Length: 452
Length: 106
Image 1 (cartoon, helix red, strand yellow):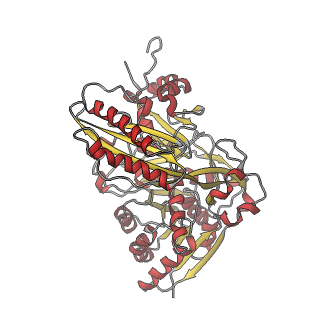
Image 2: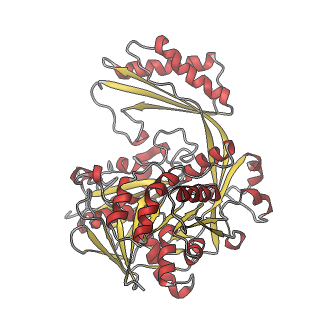
Image 3: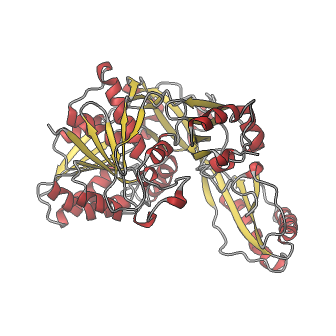
């Protein structure tokens, strides 16, 4: 058994940069490289792709990534674990295996972890699907509009695939941290029991710190101005030890930085109660751990604790909730704010003339309050330019189209100096219905294909 | 007047319609001032009708940080909100406007 497991994070989202992942693979002496491609929003986008084409629905980037990384990973004995399977992990596995075959990687084993998609059995689950955010228990009211339903599954399937000798693993909606927890648990032979609760919590904590890649090496940092060479940022590398302590670091001579602050910044990202960071593999308590500097770009994390995995899994159901029509217009000095106010008035008149049936309407002043809303500071002085953004929720595509059209009308009907850019196409609105279901209702499936 | 921007770092994001903001003290002294000043009431007053649900502030004494959890805070959530900042990435920076409450001797 190795004394230290070396894990890298190769992607923090669908759209992330490939070059830092390749650099980490080539120079990091990695045992595992994990890739997080999914977010709540991503699953909805992928579902839309699968509805158009039953062979789609995985993150297309996953094939691009594996094309570039499979051969060097094999040479170095690094296993690649990603959740790029999205809502169609089997199709992703086929595409990756085809690509491996084209590259002549005979004997390479591609593992597919699925079972998270409960859409086909939604009515047979036999449990109340109460919305855990709103408390609403009238699921029947939205049932016929449901388009996607995936449970956040734990690392069991990844562990099974690794045990089966998989070199490349692609999964559906496993939790982000499971991409790393699975590799650690497999390597150290841990089980999901009470005795391992603290150690699994340590793996979850470390997974959480690195799962968004550059987000713990200077990306998104409040200290971004002092971060060196962020265009050549190094992705994070973890040295995970048997005693469930870990060092977060990155390759030398890469951009960005790893220090206590960059680690803290991601530790606090998108968490609720820090004493109970609930993941399908276990519950991590972020309030006991200690951070210490361990040399340049090295942070030691110790004393991580937690509790055993919950009996329930989070299931996110997405359902169609009408359309969004959106437009943006820009106005120049002098009196840009005055022009924007008058343009808003004109837009409302256009909406009325077009008979727009709006369910909800939202205006922003770009450059004034679009990002901070009521928390924005009052505008002082005369800005050189201001934008007016409008977004409207409608029942149908046709209604949403009226918003786009009305915004275009202002190119000439609007104030002098109005410039509109590209009119925005209506987009479907998908609402989420998060709920909890008993863990045993979701059975993971693992299949391994050997490339011939 | 000292503002939160002078003594804290932030990072924000989303979980459904919930927006979470991590607030990190730049020093131990700053942490006490932040705990005193970043209250659910102060956060609610800052965001007004941008945040419709309850607000909870959790402490992380070990790393001198807070987790601010704001429910019904993103206009329905990333996949259906009418807001431009659909995932609340800029909400943390908005929080930096909060004034730091003085105490005797601070």
